[in-house]
Length: 182
Image (cartoon, rainbow, N blue to C red; front, side, top):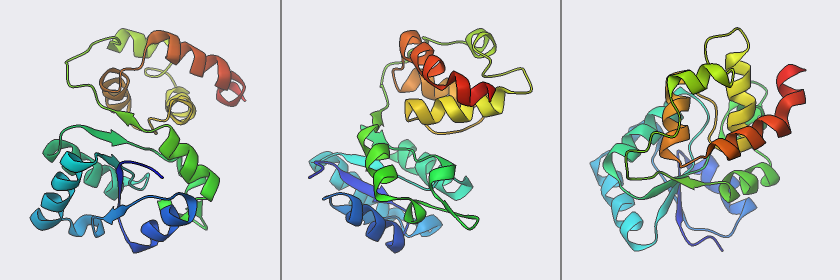
């Protein structure tokens, strides 16, 4: 049983998560998210904590940003696009039980303090920005770290706000070097 309440986008996502884990799940009704739903999620956050688990696409990112700006102390779970894809349809509902469990196991909380472990220079140094292979590197390493794929600017923000250390990043690079270069 997962202690936190998992926040997903729709009914199909609820079904997929409940097939994978024993947890309470709330839907945002996709981009139909409104003040009433946010209020319910805020209450859930105060009582049990929440894990935001949206689709790895633009609407999912937008919903995640809305919730993050409204609610403190939430965890974030990310599922890789390739593990949430069924015939070109991207969504949590298309992920396997194993992929959902892995994403939830790797859920991370944002750190409240303004932490700057990483800088733009680090992004370039680690090949995560400023080269032709940077997007692929961010995708593979983001999946390994459980922070998902995003732009270089957002990736830098996630590295810092999720409390990832240089050692964790370097371990992820070492583990995925063949996927990155292959």
